Image (spheres, rainbow, N blue to C red):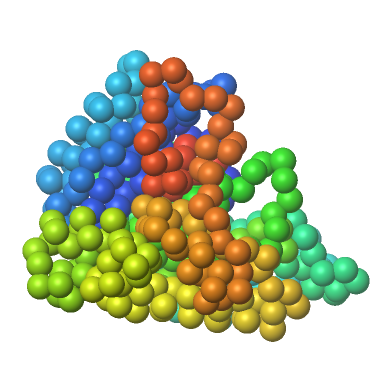
Length: 350
């Protein structure tokens, strides 16, 4: 198997978002037209924390998912995501006098000082931040890294399924590729990706992603807490979660359970905003929401009240030229990671 590398830029044919509770795939053709998308559920325990626990079950879902896309010819190449909780993303500063060929080896040596991994046990990529501090003797460099065992495990599974892996990307990097307009400069902001099994925050600074953190919040956790609070089964709790959201008047009994979890999200956003002020001299201007949890009722209003930052649901189709007539994504924001992977995932083989 070729030596994998985690990368930040490329243009693969199929974006494959591997989730613990669902798999999503998006096909964007060479003209920039979104031709197909598909999603299928994954049974709990099949894929956990970046590890394929049940390859047979996972391969069955993957085969059905790719068939559902109905792409002419055989699907042979994908770019795939790994969980933010298994990746590391951070801006570091290096001496401005380094030559381009010296930056890579220097980054490798610096990795173990910034991430809880040994440099020989990690795959990584880097890029110079588009915006730099004026008159500084240091240059800001973005590093994306992940444990080699996680990346190689996912790659091995996909290659064993007859696919060539064109790229591997951290979920937050992929989602940002979809949500940030190509023509517009990156504004200081926080990307909040609220998924069924996990939530992550990514800080935008210096015109690029600067760092990411995980938050103990997920759609599944909210459902369990609502079920416990109301004494109901999972199905009824799921209905209550969707219909109530953060609307206290609509569901006064379920609201405390839901609000207590989103309070942790608000605290994490406020802490990341304050850290940005200390580290980079400016606070984010807004929060961009993605993932299924972004559709929670009254979430933007709640975050504005708790953090002082305006929040909005992102548009993952902003960089797509058009959509095929017969292709409709009912809730595009849930496909942000898959769209980002299809648009500009990672080159494989650093």
